[in-house]
Amino acid sequence: MRSLQITAEPSSTDTVERDSTLGDVPGLPSPASGADRAPLMFDVIIAGCGPTGAMLAAELRLHDVRVLVLEKETEPVSFVRIVGLHIRSIELMAMRGLLERILERGRQRPAGGFFAAIDKPVPEGLDSAHAYLLGIPQPVIVHLLEEHAIELGAQVRRGCAVADFEQDDDGVTVELADGERLRSRYLVGCDGGRSTVRKLLGVGFPGEPSRTETLMGEMEVGVPQEEIVAKVTEIRETDRRFSLGPFGERVYRVIVPAAGVGDRAEPPTLEDFKQQLRTIAGTDFGVHSPRWLSRFGDATRLAERYRVGRVLLAGDAAHIHPPIGGQGLNLGVQDAFNLGWKLAAQIRGWAPETLLDTYQAERHPVAEDVLDNTRAQMELLSTEPGPQAVRRLLTELMDFDEVNRHLIEKITAIGIRYDLGAGPDLLGRRLRDLDVKQGHLYDLLHRGRGLLLDRTERLTVGGWSDRVDYLGDPTAVLDVPCVLLRPDGHVAWIGDDQQDLDDHLSRWFGKPAN
Ligand SMILES: Cc1cc2nc3c(=O)[nH]c(=O)nc-3n(C[C@H](O)[C@H](O)[C@H](O)COP(=O)(O)OP(=O)(O)OC[C@H]3O[C@@H](n4cnc5c(N)ncnc54)[C@H](O)[C@@H]3O)c2cc1C
View 1 (cartoon, protein in one colour):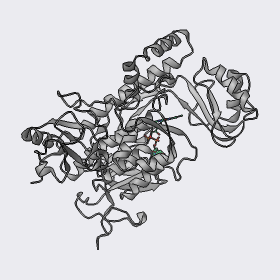
View 2 (cartoon, protein in one colour):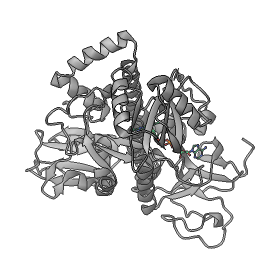
View 3 (cartoon, rainbow, N blue to C red):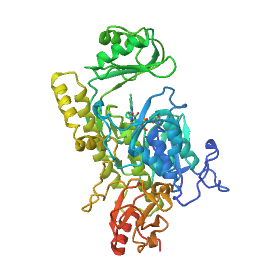
């Protein structure tokens, strides 16, 4: 990056000067009189307004952090990919008051049948008030999260690609593709699998390149529905990477293995689809009038580090894997949920020294596990005799409730337990939504603060009351006396001793205010 001439940089509590090119910046203080020439300063710049970037922006705004999201595309994506929101992500939406909005726009389906598309029912009594899958178009999720972030005061600038950055002891100077420079305390790369931020940071992205590619698109067909159903049923007996089904008025969603691994930047043509349909099904079903055509691979990679100084990575920028099991978006949104309050604490000045590093310590192993389960699932989709035999065996094993439950808890992310040290099994896990005397526990988490749920009604959050809420409720259905919840809903402490609680409040929420 060229040497930069940046003038005095205000601290996070200083007045922020407005840049006339930005117009009104919701959530920022009014323009200071006089020296309007100082560079615009944000606490956090987020590269990329996909689901991860939008979720992170909203989480930061809950703590009054000044956020700018830079998105290289001028318009939201035009093609509609239906994705599955799994249980933990639905719970996150409930924890931030977005549940109704998201449920209105999606279709609820049973949570089972996602591991390698092995068709098994959902085990009884999954530990969640939201034990279903929500099928919803990805652009709708992105729009809802972006809208939520903007409502909370985040600014989103479209048509702005991050091209370069330089970090120093006090902040990061970000350069856009058009040469404009912006200054912030932190930069987070939520800029997808080909992340510019990750590449500029020089963070390794080891793993496997794509070995197979799949074509996916929406188009019309020229043959009767019965003919399609019969053929698809026959092919899917052996090849589960193939599907062709109705998807709205006259439109069919076609998924078919590609001939080889090509240039992913080049979209496939309708002729590519026809050829592959003829190879695999013996007919191209008379497909015509495509709405959109795309391809995806099965590359599997994980960033070596999630943080270098003042620059962090989240979502696909940090990990990529094939879409089997529908976990990528969920993983990214959950990264953002884990990172948001920690980065906010760092900026607001109350973060304990190691808090921000727990982001990588907690989320890197979760991504490693997702990458591994997608590798396993891809093997189980192979048409080779060995993997087919393993698939038959696993299908039998999944008749055991514990096996089925374990795999569902993995895919839906409700089985995650962060390593917070020795303690009861609940320590480090997320707490399900409970009925409490005020209604639902998750409704009390909308503001993104910690919460002490105290069944003894003897404890207090004392000097941490500016960061942690208190709920005394002897009627709460819990088999422990008290739990301290972090803003992401994970259990940080269990017990009934005030001194022990204070130690844990310090560990997660820093020094008391008074
Ligand atoms: C066929 C298919 C089906 C899938 N189904 C599911 C599913 O059912 N469930 C699920 O959880 N996941 C699914 N996924 C995965 C999911 O789509 C991704 O994991 C998710 O989009 C990642 O979100 P993200 O915000 O991290 O990255 P992205 O969605 O890639 O967003 C990154 C954003 O950054 C922007 N950007 C890039 N470079 C720059 C730059 N230099 N400056 C500024 N902005 C930049 C991009 O324009 C983009 O808007 C599927 C993926 C595929 C391919």
